[in-house]
Length: 114
Length: 113
Image 1 (spheres, rainbow over the protein chains, first blue to last red):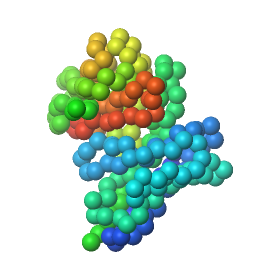
Image 2 (cartoon, helix red, strand yellow):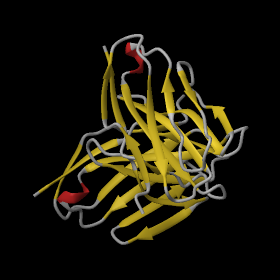
Image 3 (tube, rainbow over the protein chains, first blue to last red):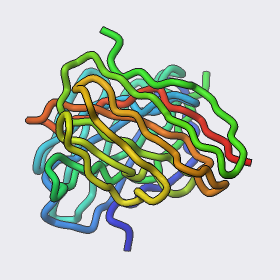
């Protein structure tokens, strides 16, 4: 079983729709849950993250964690064509030499159409 | 503040050639790392460094070398390129107290023929 799993999509929605992007993870010890956005041929850009359970909101974006079901979600309200990108969930894991390795899902490709 | 920069943007190598991918950051971040991104595999950690003079292996280190002589720079060397190293390479950095919060460069797209 992969440590982090994510539906690759693609997901196509009309402008203004609410988008739900989801990941599942395997290890109940994980504490931080990151969301990155990656535009085509660009580097991943940190969007937001949550610590432990609960919700976090930033403008049109809401990140949610359900630790009981090991499920993380990113909601985008009032989606815009500029939101068209690949969204990656990632979970930091401690390294023996210090620091964290980010374990990424494979990403969900989102297209918001006019 | 340029953030994390990488050069070159694109590179084509022949099998057996060597090269160095450059990475620099101007955020005074102690922690730096290299990932490769392959279709269906996500991003995987190659090497990382918690500070100048200290490096360690990630999950896919074979065929790559790193060194960290300054806080700002973290080059990745391919010793003898193989077609399996065709990938997109990303460098990332973070503050040592928040290494879960990593900031990525724009990437180097490498093709080995």
